[in-house]
Image (tube, rainbow, N blue to C red; front, side, top):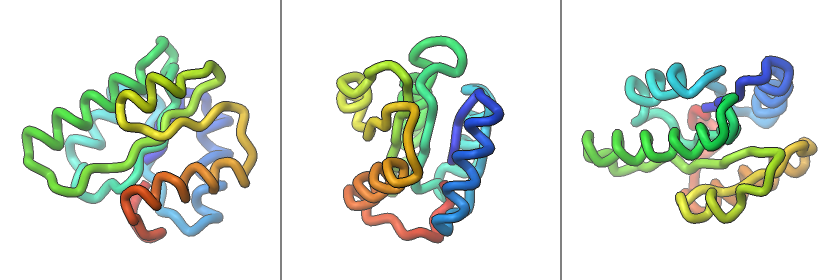
Length: 129
């Protein structure tokens, strides 16, 4: 799942993900993302979220929501999370159990971040993002 409030960044990132063979679910804000996560959490293997949606740390709040859903529904397969930001949020992302991807990023950097995250959870490319 891709959560990004900037329409251009969302479009370009989704195209990059699709070129890598992923099925991409998209949301432009925290509320929409949480609705989709609540409905499809079992099918989502990776969440790539902007941290500022547009309010600061909204991406980190999505992580909290995912953890609540996983605990409430006792989901065994927890989605891997990558937090994107133009500000250094690496410590906050790490503390929340997420990978961090600084913006702006290249397709190579995006692919590398996904590979790191996938290695942690052993995801496959046909898993919804």
